Image (cartoon, rainbow, N blue to C red; front, top):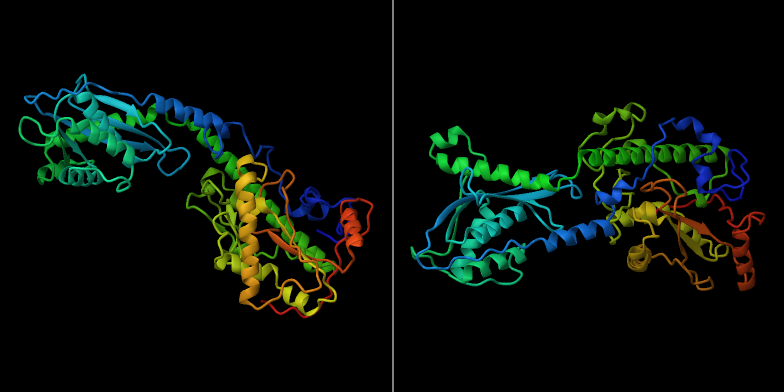
Length: 484
């Protein structure tokens, strides 16, 4: 941003954030793209948003249907059944789109064969394997010898049977383990003197070579294959439609386009401002290099259309959903949602954007206080307008950032606030107008204020929001500024 309300490059009467990305002086670095939105209502239906009432209602409905209770025959002469169980998970690489299912196989065309979806929000293969065992015990009504390819289930169930009890918090998916224990506790031993439920490990996805080598029997290989097929069918019951996933990928790709566009625009803008001689500490916000842009995942966007030809200096990749970004800068200078703890990343970020702090300390007669302007959406990927986040996370993140700045000053023996200065640190939250978050850009920038009395200070603050007011930020003299 410039020191005056007008744009330094094109003379536009109002230089706001929206104008920065529409300025004709930097139009040559932007490319014409198809008009495609960055947000779509399908995001809520497919669970992209973290706070989604529709998605929560769906989960509650699934949980309410989680009742497959069948009266278990606990007579001592009950015959032990053989069965195979397995779990499957579709789109396992995506936290948002993965859907799991469970399968129980008693025999070909057997009336007890089951193919069910995995209810709840935890959609992973491990839980689906355990849920299949619970379903098998519920519907069998007799002692069971279950063969599963989950070594984890076999080991934990063996430990529970040997210990004869269940310790809360000892294992993952405690609710299912407790349910399984309660189902079998009513009759701990069958007619053969063995526990009601016996789990046996078999090889997963066995081939004929495994059968010939004696690793697995042909019957177990066939049973495991059929159980896996039933589990896959169960996962497909509530799988996310392909067009929703493709639409989401398109939205992510469009967001990457705009982020690259914004980075190029700010690079060119900063270069032109420097060439004109208007550069000062207020502009220390976007010193980046093309070659330090990294991708967050290994899935190339090139397969979706080859946009890397337009932006050859940037790495392309689908982002990990959450508080991360499609592209990031050098980890030593970038900041993401998981970097707010005081680590090297945040330390280097503060050192980069506040390399003029030493000048401020040595020239306290020029400086009254320092305003820290934080583009919180670019730093965390979360809009402050989200109610839950606005009430809890935003305040906490600001407190963490303030503490990090103080710790930085303590490490480098910097006195951030002069004794006679206004002891106030102001952090404002900016929401980019119509633009996506740009990680690492404009996250933090120092603005030096001149000395004034309280009434003059209030008047100058009011002028900052007045279009016709005088310049509010003061230029910083070009003095030697040792890097911190």
